Image 1: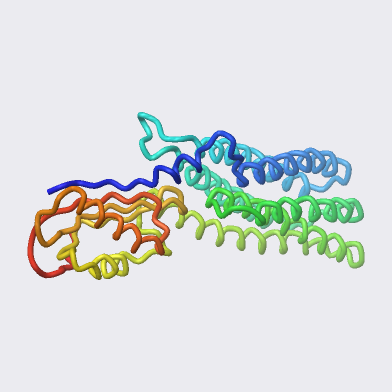
Image 2: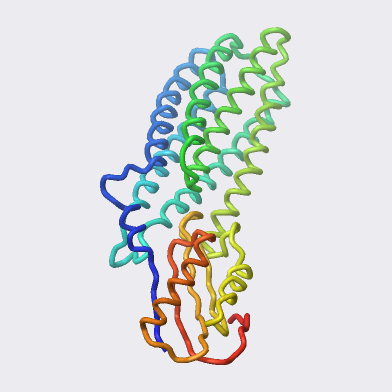
Amino acid sequence: MAKEHSHNCNHDHHHHGSAHVHPVTNNLKVAFFLNLLFTIIEFIGGALTNSVAILADAVNDLGDTFAIGSALFLENYSQKGRSKNFSFGFKRFSPLSALINSVILLVGSIIIVYESVPRLLNPEPVQSEGMLYLAILGVLMNGAAVLRLKSGGDSINQRTVMLHLMEDALGWIAVLIGSGIMLLTDWVIIDPILSIGIALFILWNAFKNLRKVSMIFLQATPENLDVESIRQTLCSLNEITGIHDIHLWTMDGQYHILSVHLVVKEDKRLNELADLRVKVRRLLNEYHINHITIQFEVAGEKCTLETH
């Protein structure tokens, strides 16, 4: 019995090259500074318009700024190469940040609902014109940040931060609509109604994102890959008579890992196993698995699909 490891050395070296600037990191930097700048504007504008809603949104955006800052740090950290203590590298730090930010989203949305319900019973007058101007600026700045994040990469960390900014942009759209209506009708109750609706929307999306992140930490099979299909593909090789101990998981939702025991018809030389390994890798190219570990064993005559 011989053991072969295939671990995409060239791919790893390119991905972690010191000259390579990860687009996700650049996008998060832009989002961070846009959010920080507008948070300061919100606090000033909220005080000038005497709007509790805008001050509450400023507090929420301040939390988002800290969330994006942590995402930026951990996303950048996740691009480091492997070390003695982290043999697969630091990719898991990206979903760690997504997990933290998802929790912040949940808590923040619950606080928004909690603060909005009393305003349904006792609406408070605000300076609607000032709110309108701030809302226009808020939509433009948060919208620009969302579009920047949407334009590059598919990191789960980036998707979570984009959800933060979508929450802010939708919140400002609600303020824009609400302030416009209040200017015409003085129906100040519209503001808390819109706030609760947006918070519930964010809660739903945050729960979905939290579930995806949790599946990564629980080492579930990546949702876009099918273990049974991989088994059938490997069994199409005449040299393979059995497959077992097949394990498939992902580090961050993008970097996938497979380990598998392959049973061959007869004891083979190392060069023959190397050729078979190349065939296996070629067959698995369509699945976009980044790290493959293969163990060859000698056993029966028929290809089986047993798992342990």
